[in-house]
Length: 309
Image (cartoon, rainbow, N blue to C red; front, side, top):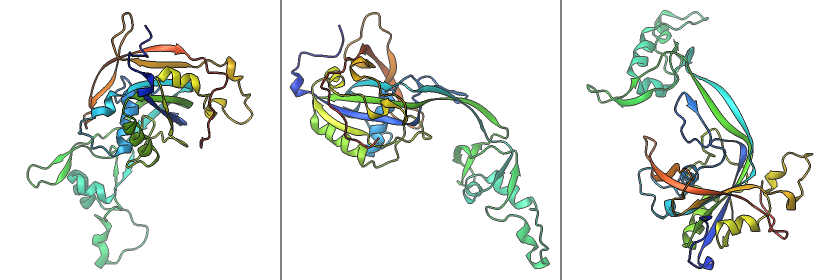
């Protein structure tokens, strides 16, 4: 059982092909603050989140048909794992007007601590040495306010918790990767709306993390049939060739891996917890899904690409 075809006619089903490529990608599965992992390929949750952002859907809205698409991904250029030793906060942090508004503790310190001034200040202007809006600096404050809440007395937005020491995190990325993602559904109009939104997004898009913007074209076509058929009928993405000067592999000899979602649980196959149920400020809710892995034999007369890499 390959989990790719149902009894319905393949001509009633279409696949939206999405190109995901850029200097860095990061598709977390189990990561937490101290260690941000990345999957070896784009996750369904990450890609559906990308599409939802492009469509401009509110974070708390039901995903509806968007979550029902069958998901597949072909690794044309798997990329190289990259580890980033990352520190956040600590040291001297320059205050901005926003910080004084959202954090009453910083505002109090900024208005009581005198600021050094290399130039003589007339007595009439002595008050300007303390509390200069956006000019003060505090020692050893964590970056931006965390856990913003309303002050119970004044109602002003303040920071419920401010960390005062540097925090160390380990973040993983995929460098120089290129994936061909497929979204399969019987509603062609839905796929067309997604494709248009990806090229005219209502919100900023990124490849799993805000530090990872996509490059070039994203929506690269809608074709009839199933995911496996679409992956076999299209040549490797131009990004699979690599940098200028790298030898181009012979297409008939290249058989990239692809992972295709199964509509039913598969015996002996472990599930992935990346089926989005809804997105929210707390990270959202996910359920389980199953997928099969395939070696893709690209057809001898596969369709090429006319896209911006």
